[in-house]
Image (tube, rainbow, N blue to C red):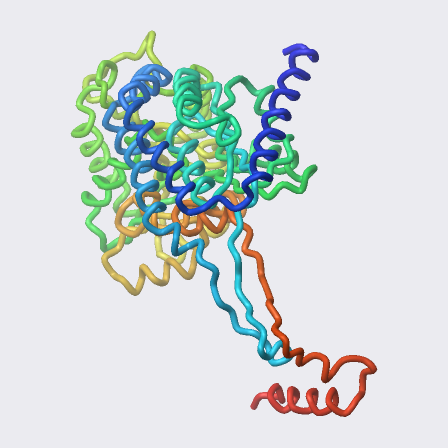
Length: 481
């Protein structure tokens, strides 16, 4: 992109933000009815465009099952809209708070106010859900929004742009397509809040750009989400549940199980059970419309290079390819189970984001916990164990954005829970009430009446009423024990 073109892009984005800010200034406190109206319009638009959206995602991936797009992208957004509509009035209600003695007679409350214009940067792996889900939260809180779609899912991005433009005015929501240059200018804008979903490395760049404007950010970054299988849990059942989650989108999911910790004596049993479960789900691969392709050649080359790196460093790699098919001319890639892994291998250093599953042995549960805790905090942690006490111990002993016990990935589907990372896997939350709060300013308000208690203790300090007030307070807050 030439400097002149980049300046044009920057000016267009800046003008759009200015127009949305001006509209927000004219209507800074949209009513609950207005918010629900916008959510209803989005709901209807998704249904109108559903089949075309599914086809666009399939084209961008060169093969993704319609069922996966419906289950993982379309329905979650519709469910989120319904849940937010049901609860927005209660969430937006001013909440009463307790006033200190010095403000006796005053009313105290928290007022929830939309912040303005939200910027949303969308990744390629779920180009519908990860663009529209934060939009739902932003609109529920009464904001306007600008969305930057992924250049690696161009068909979906263009269709979402068409859908939004046919549904909303440009001062409500806009969609912006284009490459990294557009994304760079987009993240430089002085939004009132910026949402980015993507890699940790790019997340750092986005946060640095946002810092120039002191723009608050929500970062959903992923990381290496582990699954720990307790020695008492049926290994075949764990393998089936993990295979279902790992097979979705061919592992190209931010909360996909990244590596598995298995009791040392059960490594072979797990790999055999996992292979059987995957072969049952995907008896063929190359021409199987249920099995998703890798999004780009660049991503495929990265995955293959990481496998080669692991092989060269002593890993044992087991390809799950029931028919022994070749994949020339496609971006399909078989699932690979990797054992005998070491920390020097790239697959144990980087988020995998594809059909590769390292399996790591442990001798004691404490050793497995220590292994997880010695690494950057992940977006998700999965633990398989029927024992509830050990499950609670796992919650307290580890840190992660979310946890799923005896399953994988389904924590994301719960609208009544926050979704977000911790540390290197992200910051901030959205979904449900936490999404409403994330995109709102909780403004503390004190309303004093005619009676002014502070007039009795005001300057000059040391007056009789002040001294009496302080003696009373320190009697209340004397040393304990």
